[in-house]
Length: 177
Image (cartoon, rainbow, N blue to C red; front, side):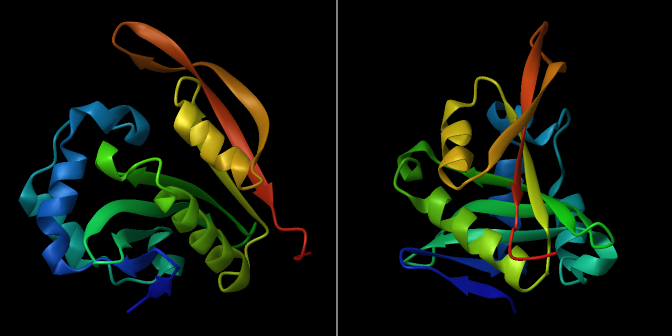
């Protein structure tokens, strides 16, 4: 089982016991914008997903980890998606579920742990993320970790009757060629 240890948090692999936590996240309409979700997920579908979560990242092109606090309570999730080993790149997405756990450094530490894992163990050359123009917390987080803004996708997402721009950020691992 994959576990990445930090000072205040750790990242661990998904477990069957995470069903309710993932169900809450996937069905929280307030965060559907960041996951491009438009329909709720049943517990049945999430259970099927969990049944296959053990599969290798090289096969499923995704790795989803749970962010746990020092008491081992699940407080969020962090994902590697669109894993492309041929071109040695992947996307990263992160969510700290409750506002009470935000702005405490948990996201920063989780992003550091996963970035290091991707560069050292998955041998990736670059990571990228897509962030809505009004998601100031995520913009600040990724900038603080060295991600560079490389583009603005105009009118990229349609939400509540309006188009919103989305930034594309990238982090190049200069230690890998």
